[in-house]
Image (cartoon, rainbow, N blue to C red; front, side, top):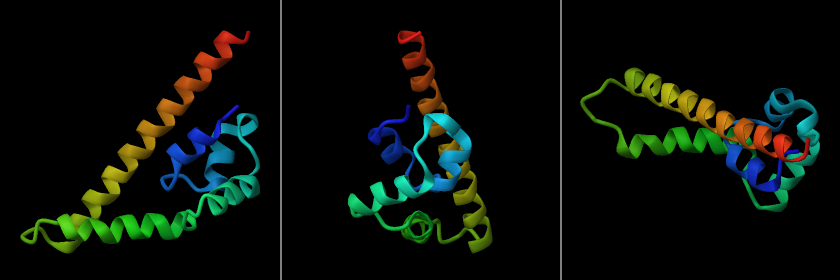
Length: 100
């Protein structure tokens, strides 16, 4: 079962619906995840991801065209999503192995 730490680790790279779809029975409902984020004072996931993308402009190379920069940021977000998903899946497999 995913822990609160897992949900926080996946935020904002996965929406609550994506977490539920990706981790199925190991996950709480999307609504429960949304409530967790709200109780912690997190922005809605989409808004937080947009803030992350907009913040990347502060470190953008001014000589790189805007479209290329956005493509780069999108690629990095995709890589981070994949990495975080792997970390959580690995933890779940280890926990399942301990309790089976």
